[in-house]
Amino acid sequence: MSRIVVASRPWLAQYGAQQPADIQPGFSSVPAAFAALVKQSPDEVIARYFDAALTRGELDAASSALACHLQQQGFAAGDRLALFMQNNPAFLMGLLAAWKLGGVVVPVNPMNKSAELGHILRDSGARAMLCLDTLYAEIVLPALESEAIDLPIRITFSAFDGQDSNDIRVLGAGPRLPTAAGAVDLQQILARAAGSSEGPAGAPADAELPQISLQLDDVALLTYTSGTTGKPKGAMNTHGNILFNACVFRDWARLESQDGNLCIAPLFHITGMVAHAALTLVAGCPLLLTHRFHPEVILETIRAHRPVFTIGAITAFISLMNTGHIRPGDFDSFRGLYSGGAPIPPATADAFEALTGHYIRNAYGMTETCSVTLMVPQDARAPVDEASGALSIGVPVFNTQVRVLREDGTQAEPGEIGELAKQGPQVMRGYWNRPEDTARIMHEGFMLSGDVGFMDADGWFFLVDRKKDMINAGGYKVWPREVEDALYAHPAVREVAVVGVADTYRGETVKAVVSLKPGAELTESELIAWSKARMASYKYPRIVEFLDDLPKTNTGKILRRNLR
Image 1 (cartoon, rainbow, N blue to C red):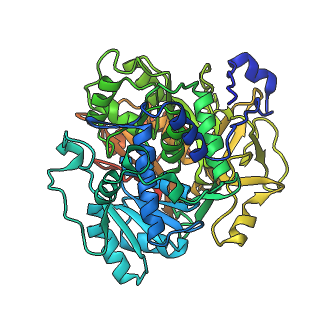
Image 2 (cartoon, one colour):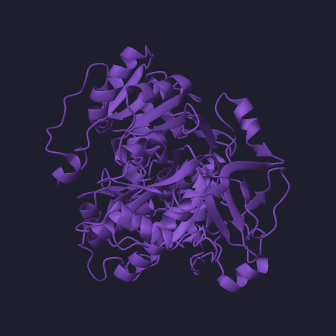
């Protein structure tokens, strides 16, 4: 498989708005790449879960055993398997099992409630589910009853499975739940396979599984959007989409098979799916799993296993800083620290580097583009736009073109603000059963993002905000992110979100919702006065509200819509 060396800033000035050099993944799917890893070194560790390790051969055998069970229950090519869990080894097993049968995976946010889950199960037509036992009891059974959904194949597992540390900070005090009615326990499926004399590690022989030849354009995932503009839609991410962007992360961050991949982003989310799960299955980088994000547990995992790469929401890095327990050298094993989901405020990037000695780089993408389309190169530091104070979100990754479009669809000039549009191997096939919505976001072969930004003369891209989040204050456009970036520079501010609220005089006015650093004191009038001295009169917040914590998605992205 080809490997590209990313050049530094002089090269960026040469290529300007053009795409970087291309890569060729060399396989047709993630399972094909993983099969090559198993054949090459079956005893290499592919995942660590607290005090336990899972080898490539063991993961291959477990996923084959699960696939055989699914097949025996009637699951076939094209059927959908929902994965409803935290960051557990079972997620990798479920991915591979479904794909070995030619099935489609539907990753589900473990924060979803019954009605939200019901919509996804009904819309996707999921036939099977692999689920954390606590979620099955609390969310799945009520959803199936209240939403009258038929889900014939149900498999549960416990977060306590496959480890002995029983860390109550993330796993709770237990005990392990008994298998609920209507479900089969994953451990029983694996135990039955281990009792067989057939196949590697006691798993059913591969001959029992169909010989599926996955193609690049075959749908691999139905990844549901966050639903900010209505009911969540299922993005049809193909095997080609996932494989390509897994290779992008591998080659952009220059990862080798022994390099640890610290799982901070949730696996159900497209970033965690590609940059953690798929990257590990393609490159062999051991995946470090901790069930869910807990800053102290993450720091202990870093010290124990010395990972080389991670990606997470900037709120996760803020949480790590706020522990007050980062030691000198904790992050020295890392070669690639990336943040996705929301752009990094420059003040936060500076604070993290001052504390750890390591620089966080932006990575920008969407569910519809199977994670990244833009990243800051490994050898470069992102520039800061002088006018807005925004940190660049990067340059187009391999094989990818990004344009900035005006309202009339024509291409904007460098420095001119417009909507970002993307084209590349990572762009989804479309929305599941929604051809009109798919057509609406396409323009001359490019996918419209709904994000507003600009490109500078050197080819660096900057994100201004979501189109729908713009505040119209007395006829002036106010982009919340610009105000947020400025407020992050205040020494007392931990997190901030800016929203527009109704105003009888100006139509809308700017409101900041703020959480403070531990021990910090700040009043509304003090922050407004501080802001007024640093921002144009139409931009600075006229209203400030303080909260202990801001509402966030499970990926750590602050929920502006909840604050409105």
